[in-house]
Length: 369
Image 1 (tube, rainbow, N blue to C red):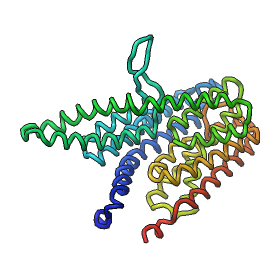
Image 2 (tube, one colour):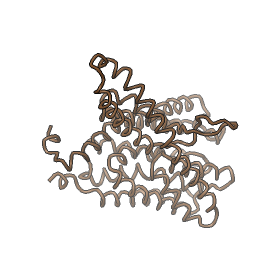
Image 3 (cartoon, rainbow, N blue to C red):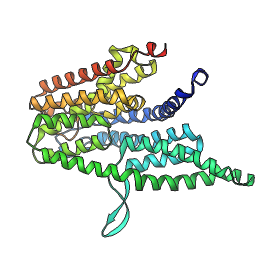
Image 4 (cartoon, helix red, strand yellow):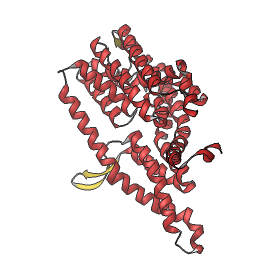
């Protein structure tokens, strides 16, 4: 109530966007945390020696945990987009946002298969794509509502059940498939090619770039491009690249958790409570733990995490740390080469991220004053 009372014309748009965003983020959190911890436990209970390429799925119990955790993760982007849209356009927005988020996660685009033009998967647009889909869906449904206001009153009953879902999904699908997903897929390919061309030329710079990429969108195209590059390097015997990739993915949640622990006044009580799980997420190589914080305050959180991850990635390369497993987290530390300096790199990167975040984020009390 207080918010609506003191929201002037200037503040209202920003506040509205923030409220819509947080509606998506708060509904997404349980999927990220629950699914992420299940996936992490899968690596803890698995036996790396059985089949290194299938680590996390080798034993029946590990496979069970990873499958359930993966199922929860699969809902993350549709939930984010769906509840952003619902906050904007109420219930009619939910289905349109959900489907938009799903299309972002699947990366559907128009492409050629066996010489025929058809819908294919051309690389996920990830977290950023789902954010765009959520807002797009909400305002699309609001637009449809205005448009259909001109229809006779007799058709009022079929608007929410027929007109909004049909036209909303149709237009949403077209926008995602033809306009949003294709450039992100192209960006993905360009990044992978760019990284490949760097190769041996400068390992430390490559470590900085890969570490930073893991933190830009935390599970999105940049993150996936770096991760795919790291896993491809394993098959060609370059184990130091995967080590830099993994450490870059571990820093963001840990940096946020450290900041919430040592600079409490930068976070609300609710944020501090959910930040604690980020210690576990970070140590388990679940970068997505940082997404709720990045979504809520991207201008401060993302640069802090990128710098921290870049520092950690560069140090990992400098110290010649290696990793032969295509995953990360404390569970694969037994197979890390030069583990002591790996931990040192992780700590330095996380502390750098924490300090930068503490500098950029102002104490909340002063903000309210």
